[in-house]
Image 1 (tube, one colour):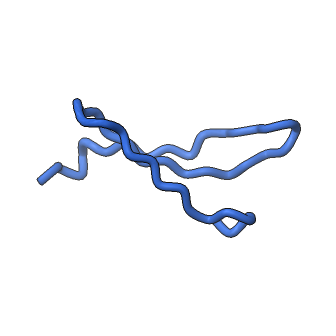
Image 2: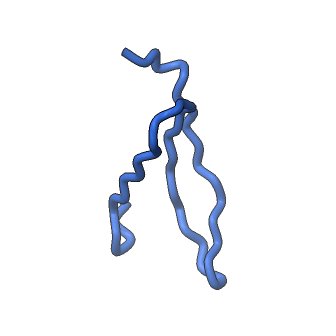
Length: 45
């Protein structure tokens, strides 16, 4: 099991075509292929 301390949580500022987007990320290092989960389309984060 991966210790929770190995996970980095971030809320970076993101602006696309003059629109501010609020996103939250969780990541950790490793050698496996990355997996991306997208959730909350339509401004429903």
